[in-house]
Length: 255
Image (tube, rainbow, N blue to C red; front, side):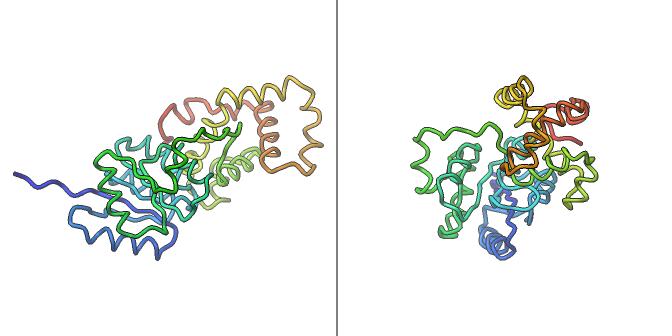
């Protein structure tokens, strides 16, 4: 009888000390094999595409693409890969965000290290793994989702896009690859073309707001509102922001 293959794992955390500690801990287990480590979201996606791991443990907060953004891309790249989100935050907003994201589990950095090992085995067995601090959110009604919800990096990309920069120029300014810019654009497109987002945008153009936008942008609006108005201008004046299927594709990562 052949032996069962070890569980293959890819780890990602932007803190080298945490990453090395997690790698050393998990590598000591005979039934778990660490294929690769990554220090940011872009490198994590590269490792996932290369190794197709059984399990990914990723930090929630990372450069270029955060843990939840990586989760979205991993679901497209390798649907069978289990994803555990690692975080130091225990506030309700963080817990609910992870629960809504469809992650296979949540690990707290304050928990005993051995729990990470157990969690890897549990998600491979088809279980969802969430700490006691998150369980009370499982049965609560979800909080209303904002009309437009983008990550900090997506907001930066959108600001540069609204200012007329190309994908290559955006990548150069943010020190990321063009592929990463395209990933962000795909996520932005999916978020901003939802029915509620379209309704809000149409409502703006059906009213008198277009004539007032130049003045409004210069006032003390929130960053999100200012960006949304810029996007409305861009959508109204330029067909190049239509995200045609030939540019980004449908339901798959751009080349």
